[in-house]
Length: 306
Image 1 (tube, rainbow, N blue to C red):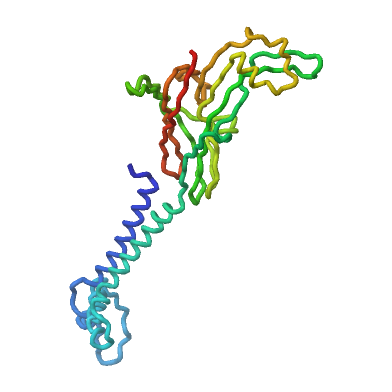
Image 2 (spheres, helix red, strand yellow; image 1 turned 90 degrees about the horizontal axis):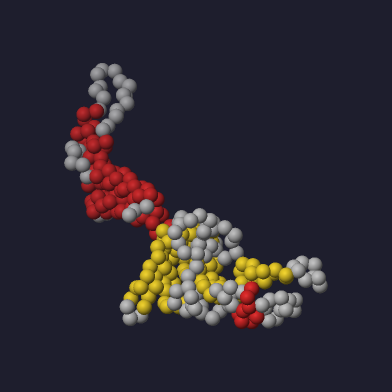
């Protein structure tokens, strides 16, 4: 499908071509010579000297006159006749090339170019986080209560603009999740309609702009929660103010699950969390107002006790 701005570019090129084609054809119209045109419109002398009258020549006759004059140029001035005849055609062709460059080549050269980057093992792509509150304790030694939160981690990718202009109103959407069995193929698939995905550091699921020449934003993909007592002890091992005497395994749910960063402010029939085992593929769609859309799959593995 041709977008609206591309259609405008094509219309502009066609208009340029028609104008220059008409000019070129006007030099080749087969009409009588300049002398015949002049005799037809020359004022008649009757006795006294008459005042010249204004003469208006049709376009075809003007073109015919120019054609007759240019026909004599090769003998008197040494210009090849094909240069005079084909010159307007070359001019029109050059105009088409310029219009094509201004409407297609230059925008293509300057447009944003979005790239998805991920490097396994680097901390900026996988970070440990503390999520929702599990419980809180009032400790008289401190002014504020101690809040115990769910330990987990967040996985994200980097969206880089390698182009030469700003990527406007950029948004990522999750289209589907597929679970695989290496021997049986796809076992299960859930469609996400698609759903907007959250940009790292943003509180809402809004669109963003990314500057050119290597600027980037991180895009949150999935997060994992491990609310088991051993994991909580491990995550808080370096904290000095943890009231371990009050934290017992019974306060922990023992849940281990993962979920995707999509907007859940309204019901859309998708699960809030997953505990499925095996390989899975998340299919994302990245799009901006002034850039080509990018489709990319994320393949990973999740093993859960649920």
